[in-house]
Image (cartoon, rainbow, N blue to C red; front, side, top):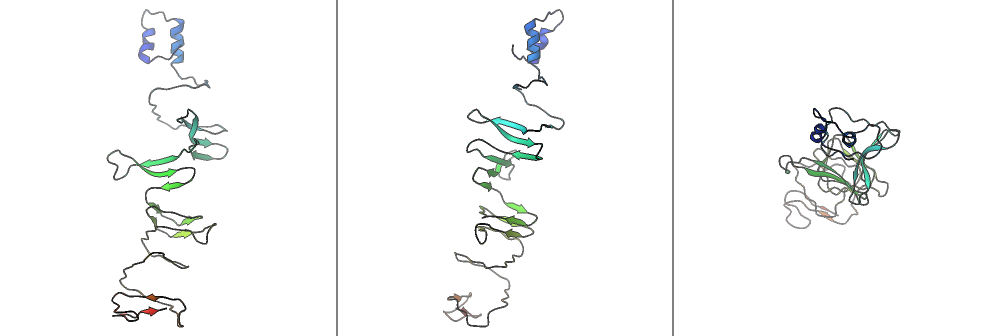
Amino acid sequence: MASKNRTTLKGFFETGDTPSEAQYADLIDSSLNLSETTLQAINSKIYIFNNIVTNNSNDTGFAYVDNSGNERLGLSFARNENKVCLSNRAVNGFVQIRANGPGAGAGGEVTSSIFTSYSNEFLMPVTASKAMIVNSNLTVAQEIRGLNGISGISTTVAQPNITSVGVLTNLTVSGNISASNASTASFGSAILSNLPTTTPTTTGSLWLSGSNAEGTSKFLMVFMG
């Protein structure tokens, strides 16, 4: 017996027809059975006008079949743990979060985040309205915007590595700031406070714009190490 579409099924029960056993079997096989535990296939879209509720003590959810034919849970629910999990349990599988972007065109989508077994990548700017706490190293491909501060606590190194940070307001640092490359800045005004009053032991010099020669300054002094 096989499932039939509605037009075919209605044709079995027209005025004057005497449906056969096989036609009744087709009618049953063409409908979903709430007590059935085997696979039931639906070949069309499903529109839901209310919530879908899972109420099982074990893991339930929405599964997919990977390219090896294995069934994998993509969105799972664990009732006993009060947990909702977006996952990909395939070997080397990954989870993408996609959204419409300004460069994607009307109705287009771009990948905003990729989660794999070895990294979590945020491909769009990350905006934090509260403090952002980092417990390990942080690598940023674009920028981090912190509206209420950026805090870093590392368990493997002395301080977390932040490769690129865009600061929209004041930046307060309680420790040292070091740079391996040349650093440039433009200030409307700069105030140097708590300068040492003894001869510095660090070798080097601070050069100011407009300096004529080493050890001299056109407008401001040059601090020699």
